[in-house]
Length: 188
Image (spheres, rainbow, N blue to C red):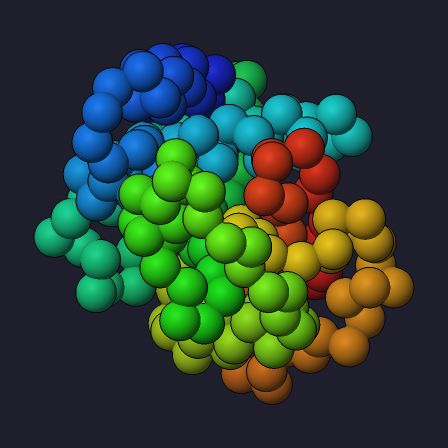
């Protein structure tokens, strides 16, 4: 069990180091998936804790490369007294057909602008995929919105009111995290 802020700081150091090095950036390198999840957990927890009664303080990493196909959330979360709060599953909503690696590789060569897509179907698909899995009860889903869209100007409950939850879904809560990690919004 580690402090969430320490997990975030470790990930942030790697993200900054990656910017200075040549090769695959932090966001696209497969071996950094765990660090990206730590970074997203840190961003989410920071915003969540602003209004929460029980502060998300500690995390235990539950998954690794060998568990990616199983229904195991990434983190078990604890408050400041080390009482379990809930488990967290983190997923990314990415535009269909989008190749992040190619974007970063061509960015320095003046990559062309990526057209905006309808983001609600992308998010709805991630919700449906995650609800179809048999996660433990008390699992919270965080959907990181890595989508090219003006969605970030309209990050409100009304914007996402058309999203629906499948009838068979045992997730405790579903949250959206904007692509900068600056805003969160609870859907369910």
